[in-house]
Length: 521
Image (tube, rainbow, N blue to C red):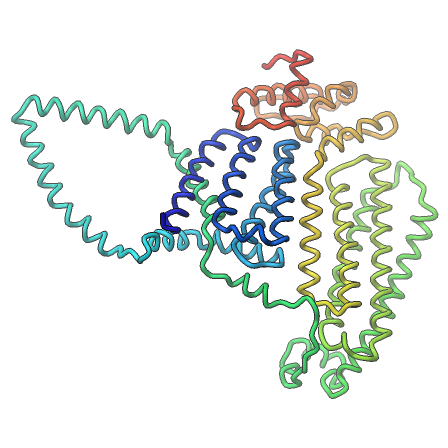
């Protein structure tokens, strides 16, 4: 079978499998089955992909996320599953080192999916198919078919047996068409086309390899280059610094002057950040006392806002000063020391915000944003470490972005291995006697937490406010009523799913409620 035809058959087969597995179902066992089809297809089409260590690690991480969709069935596990699948496919189809460029190749596959489809269609026989020739052949059939229809109509009026036979055939075709559209409704057809789009974007490789070529041209280590003075004077940086520093930044002593400007800037910024960190040492590390009236939310968000702004500006500033030949200037020692101190102080700022977030969680419980801030702080620390390595080892910005992107993927896969809703509910409910419980937030968590709420029903009973609404209710519900509503809806929905939607998390909840004999309303 020709490669083009083979790929087109795979795409249509994959769309049919997608339609059968996911129509009126939710992600579960069907996700694993569909993933087996896609991954085995990619490995078959691109067998050299598993010879690369990066691809093997990506596939291992993807298998973890797929198993977490089956086990935890959380939103983050589904996001991690989708991202790692796209990356595995992109790294298999193209030569890549960076997640960013691989994402560009994946986006290009979907952007050019229609041209890719017709490219495969035109070349599956080994030569290009002339659409004009096909159109000409079809046009030649039009007149003979019209003549045949006219005479068939005349003969049916003259022959009763033929008329009855044609009527029977027409009724059969009509019943078949009605039955066909019952099975393949407009919604089902649209769902099939969406499956065709998803599978086509994964299987059909774009002929252009713009992002792959650009990726392979990048260097991890900075190279010393001879700057052309004329080209530098035409740049935006030259215009900016000529306004501030006059001609000193564009003359033959430009590198020396830039080094001096960098040292002075970092001295001033380090002094300012030292003052900020000393305030944190005095009032946060050594003298923090929790009071009920303390605005911990503002306390944490304020610190996080300062951190984000500070880190972004710090990285941009350091990337500017260490963007080129200043890395190789033999008198840049103090500039480097200033940069290292600046990085260490920003790392301390990260720890200070972490401590604020710890107090926030300790006194008010866990929540999505508080957990998200912890992951963000971890990424910031990794970013600071890589900025240090960039300066210390004269690495490029490409290296910085590539390493941090891989770190983010690793953290995403790790985060997908936990059911955070259950962790949040367990932690908050375990401290219900000492910490106020945010009942509306607990009732907004996923269905996996319903058994925990059942075991802590007293928390819902004590919440007196009637502030919960549903589509079916004409009055505000109490927390307990809303919980019963969610429980009944969940159990009723499970009856509409088949084994394709099975996952461990939902099966656990169903088993729990069947054990306590909860009727389905």
